[in-house]
Amino acid sequence: MIKYFKGEYEFLHNAYNTPVIYEGVEYSNAEAAFQAQKCASADLRHLFADLDAVTAKKLGREINLRDDWDEVKDDIMRNVLAAKFENEDLRDMLCSTGDEEIVMYTKRDAYWGVIDGEGENRLGKILMEVRSKLMKDADNEVGEEDVDFLTTCILDAMNDVSDEAP
Image (cartoon, rainbow, N blue to C red; front, side):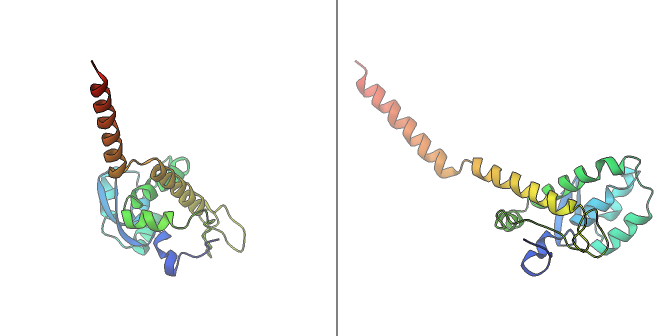
């Protein structure tokens, strides 16, 4: 079980500094991208682009919250994390966690994490969903070698047919 987003698992944290492009805006981290989506006015979201995670979170608590926030926040988190893990290195690191359960232990947030063994762990669950999808996509990916091999097989089969033709 992965409990803490520190050390080798620091990349799981939304505060991890890596560019995240979400809805056409490049944010400096996933937390900034997520907090920006709270804005009732989409015109203000770009203001979060260059913020560090702590500042973005503070600002996210002060802005006019969009009316549908409670209904959309999980989907937005899922989409922001999917955007974050488009980075090949981060995708590989997430997939390398295999089927480990991911639980965000925290001191203050029983919705996104777990406090003293209690909480919904929505962030951990969404990370596991994203990982599962990425691993499934990787399993279905056709590599260049596969295309070359199939092309060779098709050409050989076509040559065999033309050799047998009268």
